Image (cartoon, rainbow, N blue to C red; front, side):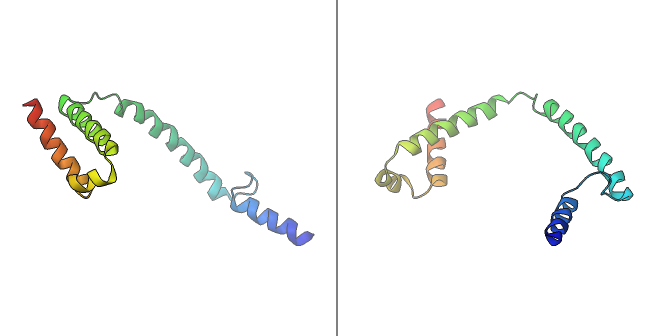
Length: 101
């Protein structure tokens, strides 16, 4: 039974334990690590506030359209269109750009 208690304490200490189980150097590092997290999360909303450009929106719409067409094709049709998604997507984008022009 004592060996099990020792094993539990070792695992507990390895996972962080309590402040009393930590060394002074480790406890000094812990507040610094936690103070960095709020600063990083505060910057994330500012970066996501940027509006997508017209070109970006058009490219996204073409990708969604081509993806929907690709998923609608059967295996035999996919083989005739091109063996893989990149080749099919390239042809689809060219076709959609010609239609718009």
